[in-house]
Image (cartoon, rainbow, N blue to C red):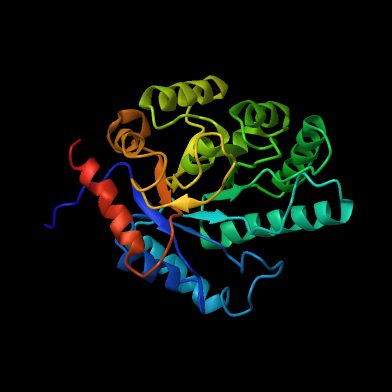
Length: 291
């Protein structure tokens, strides 16, 4: 009898392209030694999904390959164009439509998580943005009968402060009608550039203590990125792990502390060549070996 290999914890992976056919994202992830995966289901700067990437045959292959690779925690990332905090009613409706479409796609592909940014209210207030995002999520979640989780991702910006804080995500979760269908995707680069000094492991734990006070086990995915932006700079330029302003201790803590063991870690680091993700994953494995 072949022994069942234990699942490494935390699981580490990367965002991969679905170019040509969505199932090829699994092949690319395996080649890079990923243990979990994030994808777009459409070109990130287009409103419509490609006709070939989501064909019936590619969907069947994607599910088969996912099961074989044990990718049970794959994440869909919303494209960049939708804005669920926008003052434009036309853009708001288009954005909600895409979110509903992604929920449907997640059901078809058997993917449990959808990551969304919290959008931009432009010159409108934080309370305006809160109400728009809650409205968007409430509408979209009406179509979510099988508890696909929508994960709210913290963002960063030089001028706009909406979508950057734990308090704002807490306000959203407390106001929506189905909070059990919401989780959090925590981005390390965004957090640091916003002003959370997570290079200090004590601050990292304080942030997660704050999230646990909202609800336990809210964070399902961590976008594990270093950053070229300094603390509080508002600069959203991701960097290879250990090569940016965050340094190494934050990533060591994420790999070794028990509280992070059941959270999927997804790289969104630069891709200069096809080995880039593998090098960053190896960086994380070197710390995980010390567990």
